Amino acid sequence: MLTDKQKNCPYCHSGHQPIYEKDNSARLVRINLKGNKKHPYCLNFVYKDKLEKDDYEPGGWRITNPAEYYRSAINYCPMCGRPLGGNEDE
Image 1 (cartoon, helix red, strand yellow):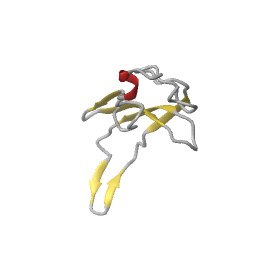
Image 2: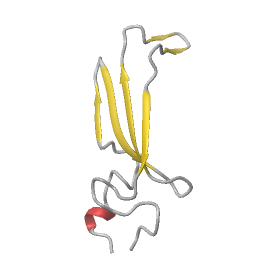
Image 3: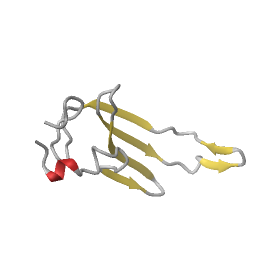
């Protein structure tokens, strides 16, 4: 049985609540959970140093330093401990 904390966890149920996020004028760091029935749950890490050369121009952003993405499959939510990807209601 899932606990109330596990049933209402905003990190593993919605997939939109970042576990950690820092976005300022110099750097972007974001850690969140993503997953669906077809793909396993993953802990995603996004890192980007923002450069003055990265700027908005008419027609879109000019990105000279793209973000780095790292991903690792996980079996349990690191925030509430709910099992992920299998029979999650047990």
